[in-house]
Length: 276
Image (cartoon, rainbow, N blue to C red; front, side, top):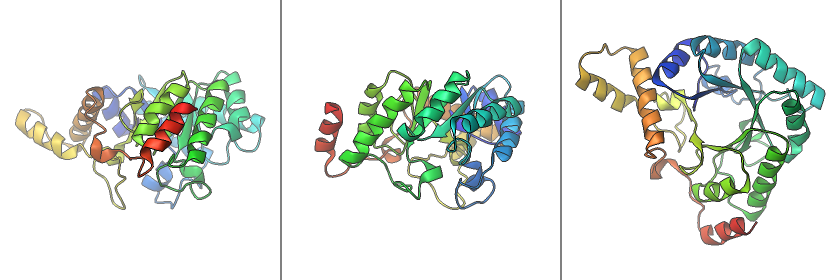
């Protein structure tokens, strides 16, 4: 899985065989220069989702529901999800939160809209929760994570994305539910990996997340070896997607450098997680 926001990169991703594209509200920070994802609107997400769906018509596309589109009520959440699916041309939606938004998840799923949950580091509410620090390093956070994962599954979601969870904990957490669990910065032992395309291509103008890895230099080297292909930005992006996909499939990514550890209380915390 990759996160991207425009037609050309979507076309490159589909050509490389990327299986799922998430059109994330991270577009607010990555492409719009905002300080957080919170100001991103539903209308803006629809524009970006439509652009991606035009570029990758054969790929499964998930659209992020931005802050303010599902918190108010079940009806408001369903109406927003329907707009994102119909006008953005996506096949599923994603939203942040567990037990606190369970009724909204259930309402959206009851409207026959596939939904992915999102737990751990949740950018829309980062200021009010753990910020952008790894999540799951205390017993209270571990217990909350389990309760939220179970609530998401029981509400009808088809999958869960875990962001910024220590790798050892994520491996245990996967067993708490029966639906697929995906990783962004949560280690190699889940059902799939997600990475921002801008990180994958080495576009780090402000900062580089610990879990990010650029495949661009390797792509340049390999294309130069082939010598038969023009080294254009489009070809570099396409080949970088191919290298990323291969690294995920062969479990070479994420590696030790791209995962979070539990810290000093690792053993006791993992034993606590296993006991739940």
